[in-house]
Image 1 (cartoon, rainbow, N blue to C red):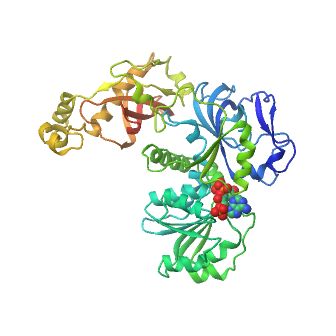
Image 2: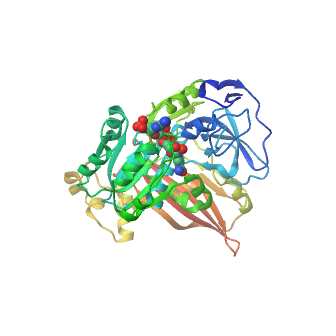
Image 3: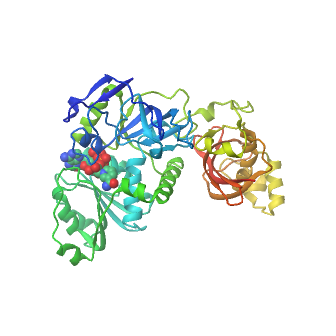
Length: 502
Ligand SMILES: NC(=O)c1ccc[n+]([C@@H]2O[C@H](COP(=O)([O-])OP(=O)(O)OC[C@H]3O[C@@H](n4cnc5c(N)ncnc54)[C@H](OP(=O)(O)O)[C@@H]3O)[C@@H](O)[C@H]2O)c1
């Protein structure tokens, strides 16, 4: 198979596409056919032997991979051949295939394409952890982002806006700042030409900024810290300049401010459930269209060295991604139109997942099932739901008023009506043999994203995301469920359902 190989530490022009053989798969590993791999700052460091992880030569850079599992080690129980995944591999991703320890591999929602999957977690995961967990950013606060047009910087702009903050983007060129403005920045500062401190003073009316997000380091750190507000938080995220700044200790004292370290990789390892929760927020916001990954350029595997070079030359706005293979069938989502192409009333092509007994369930965790057949939401169904729940809001039941007042002139299905259909879809898609009972037991989360007007067709795709064995022998199965509406790229509903298997 082909891989971009680093045979001697140095700059990207040392890298070459080479035919290699992967090492045999270890028991705890899975092999992934790589479809896309994100380009990140550590790729530039690792090929120069300047990164904290130091693989032995020869190796391929590329630490953020998305693809399909093609082989599973003997000790891996929760991942299956055929599952679409992302993997935080640290290196090895600029290649047609990669072996990765299963602990670093995560199933992706059926609605996520490989380009998004390979380019989102590293930058958005870092910036969300920084702003939410480390800075405890609050709505109404002001954030200064240095290197704002870069990978983590651009993610920080979108997340800070999503969290209700006022964003001041700082970067080195007018083009970069125009890009920052486009993705949501409220104010822009060109730090190659303007004085950072005086601009911040005038933007904040002398108050200073509540949070500084610094992924750049170097000479900007001190003026940025001197511009911080009382109780401010200075996030130390990275040193893209290569220079670790020195700061006089009297400054945090005088400002009542904190200097806060951010290490997303360590956070994800030490606090996996908090990290998973953050990832779910990010995926949800992506699905809802509230954030998006700004892709600078999609490079081929042959161009992967150039992609790293562009990053080092500060040419990348947002995120660069290397596409190794194109997905034959597009996913059902944000970037796809599969759901809109299917003909109404034509049963969706799908295989029912048959699980032969309780013990087998674990093998199917991570598996995506569906799509189900399309189902038309009729006024009769809506009325019957209203009768059962005693919830007669006019938007659901008053056909004449809806004609006059609602955007499509149609009544709208109650969100909980769509939710109640998940189990009906689910029985269509999965069968667990030899078990006495299998029923929906609870709901961890639900988001009603878009309305479902009467006569819409909806269907379900779902991922068996986890399981928990209870002391009485019953099993809680966690199912990430997404309901799509025909003709719409956005899901109408996403929910984590818990089913009890007794
Ligand atoms: N702490 C963590 O958990 C964590 C996680 C991810 C990344 N990081 C770190 O965050 C930093 C940025 O990562 P990234 O993925 O956002 O990188 P990136 O996309 O290359 O962005 C870095 C930005 O820094 C600025 N910069 C200034 N001097 C530079 C130089 N000499 N070389 C390159 N860029 C320079 C550039 O903006 P201007 O041209 O506008 O100045 C550039 O857009 C890196 O140091 C990375 O290691 C830390």
